[in-house]
Structure formats: C-alpha cells, structure tokens
Length: 453
Picture 1: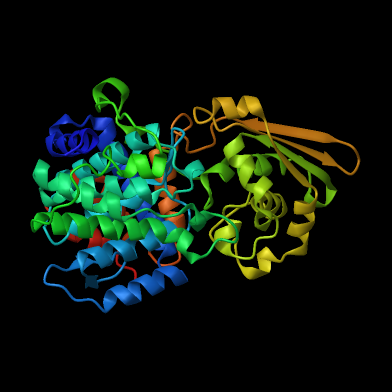
Picture 2 (picture 1 turned 90 degrees about the vertical axis):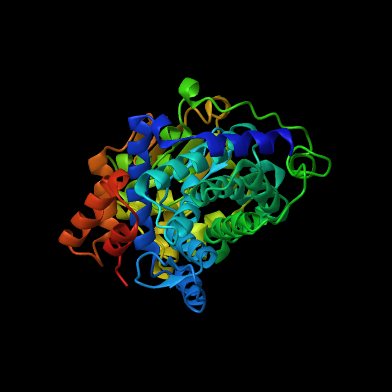
C-alpha cells in the first residue's frame, strides 16, 4: 500500500474510545442531535422519498434501519437513503480549512453498518471521530472544489474509514477498501454549478453508499490497486495533478477535527450564514420598503458564486436558492427569518424579494479572502431611499466553533425541525437517548425513538 493509505488505515485501526477526550465525545453527541434534526426535517422531501422508496424494494439478511421509520433495507441502500434525508435541508454541519464540505455526510455510513452488527454506542462514537479525522485532515491539504471535483471525492475515503472501523476491518483489509472506494468515485464539480438539481443533496449520499459497499467487498477479500492515492495514475496525480503529503495525525497536539466543525443557524450553504445573520440584524434598523441599495463585501469563496453564476440571482429551484446569497439576503430582509419553508415556488417568485435582489451588489474583499477560513468575514451596507446608511459585520457567524451554539441551542434546533411530526415527549425521549449514547448497548432504542413515519 502507498504511504497515505497506510497512514489512514493504521490510524483508523489504532484509535480507541479510551483515547477520546470528553469534549470530542460530547461533540459527537451534539453532532448526532444536529444531524437527527436535519434528517427528520428532510424526511418528506421529494429526493428523500425517492431514495427511501427505492431502498424499501431491497431486502437483506443483514437489514439496516431506514431512519425515521420502522423499515429496513440493505446497509448500502439504507446509508444512501438516510444520507439523502440528512443532506436535503442543507442545515447540517460544515468544515473548511480551506478545503472541506459536510463531514456529517459520513455518519450514515457508520450507522448503516452499526445497526446490523449491534454495535454499542462507544464503537459508533469512535467510528464517527475516525471518519471526521480522515475527511477533515485530507481537506486540510487538498482543496478539491477549484480543481473541478465535488466533496464526495474525499468524503468517500472518510466514510470508508468510519464504516471500516465499525466493521472491525484489519489494517490490510481497510487499505483495500480505501483503494476500492477512492479509485472508483470521482464526483464532478458540475453537481454544484448552474441551476442546481436534486442531486446536489444526493451526491454525498451516493459516496456513502459506495463506502459501505467497498468495506463489505474488502471484508470478503476483494482487493484494489496497490497505490490508489500516492501512486502512478492514483488519486493525487489524476485529480490534483501534484503530490500530496498528508502529515501524521496528532489530535493530542492539534485537536480532534470534529471540534472544529460549524453548525448552521439557517438551512442554507455555509457561505450564506454570515450574510443572512447580517440581513436579520440590519432589518431591526430599516424596513424592506425603505431599502435603495444593499452592498455586501465578503471573501472570494462566498463572492464567486454570485459573480459567476447568474442562476443565483433568480433561482428557480430550492437547491439553487439555498446556495444563493442574493436570494437569502433579500428573503431575510423581507420576511425576518430563513427557515426550511422559505423555498417554495411562491417565495422564489415573490416580487418583493426580487425587487430587493435588484438593489444588491456583492464584491470580494481581498483582506477577507486572506483571512478565510480562519474567519468568515462579511460586511453589509444598506442605504435607504432617504440616504441613511446602516452597516453590520461578522467574522464568525453563530454556530462557528469560535462562536458556538450551546447545547440548548442544538436541542432547540432539533425541536424546531421535529416540531411538526414529534410530540414534546417524543422529542425528550430521543434527545435523552442521544445524549447518553456512550452507554447504549446498541442503536435500536435510539433508532426507535426517531420513528416518525
């Protein structure tokens, strides 16, 4: 095996629950609560229904739960369906350093195998930490978006390591699984440009399914290429076009990466979180009908989408709208909040929202670009028809690990997302089980507590 594959497989196999500090264990549970709320909130969305309907046609001798229901499918199809529901609202965690994406996309891979294997809570927690370490530390050194690839290229490797940890793969077998997954899953950046489709929220779940399938194949003895990452025509040469040197993992020195993730306050792309918050802040000082001009200065990654994609200025799909700074800022100013219900066709066509979009300009601030991803700087200036100018700025939007949500905030987000389909008592039961996950003998009670359909 090549050096990077050896590094990843050795780290995965060697990490134990006993090595995890209390704050990392606690953050896993916070992340699971955040993710469970996102999944329940996305369960009835059309892409989630499509994925779940297909998964329900598959039976298996090692069934895995379709979360939110009492039904099961094969582990790979359960991982896919659960991943689609989890991702749909675009409300889940993020990590950028500056590469990255949504590391909780990998959680369904862990859960899909932990269920039939009857794994205890500590095994699940350790596997999730492993998946985050692998994906995030790869993302520290490989920024794939500008190269034309989607985040599943690295997510599938992290998901393999998390799923392989649950499955108990030995180092050599895990290396084979990494090889099988990495050489076979190269999602294109086309997934996230132009008018975005349902697949925007499904592509990472597809990588999750591939990860589960790869570890299952490796468990049965399937072999993959010897040097899938570092070698000739391997991932780095073909997709990155230069050697990549991943240093040894040392979370004791620089922290477990799950502690550096960001929770979202709004159901939209990570780069829209700051602008939405600023719009809501300024709305307390000006009324929408008084606005003559809106000017936003931000870092290049946030500004570039609006600058290069006209679809973001007149979104026609939910998937485009929840990645559109112009739409989300205008909607927040007009309606006073952004929720999962902010993306209906009526809102997308709302003439008041479109009028506000027409007053907006967005530009890159080079100093902000230099400080990203340590800071997510945005400054918004609003000028009224009377000539009054009000401004607001933010470096770390609410939910950033330097401006974190409290445990109560995370619980409140879960309750908001589940309010339409779970009673308060039902939510209390689910939350209590998730907060005590390290004591669980298996996941059945947790999964049962999340049944809503």
